[in-house]
Length: 112
Image 1 (cartoon, rainbow, N blue to C red):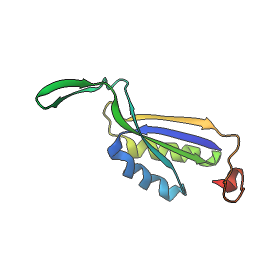
Image 2: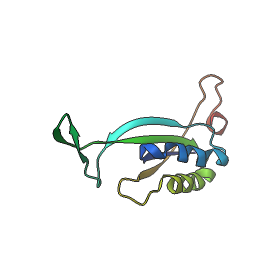
Image 3: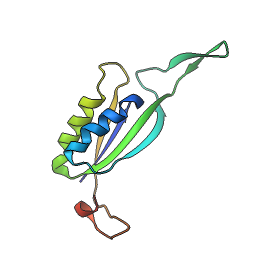
Image 4: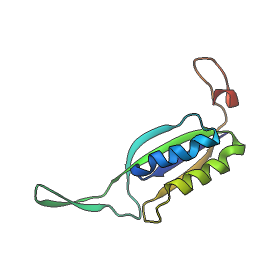
């Protein structure tokens, strides 16, 4: 099993979800996060005063999938979150040793 964690632009969330559904991804976790990197923040104006925002809003998606499905999920996220502009995000892949559904006690692949 693999944990695929993707940091994407907020307006791309629906596109990513729609790309993952046909692959059989039944659930994912979404968090609103803030971060900075090569995008270097942005300058905004509030009540006439200009200020610099270093941390930009992003969305973090976490999904656990069987190892044989991981490459397809990574490709789907990559294609659907791509805008070609700086700040498109990153994808991280982590091995998962074990998973358990608390309600039923199912483990590993059955728990997904």
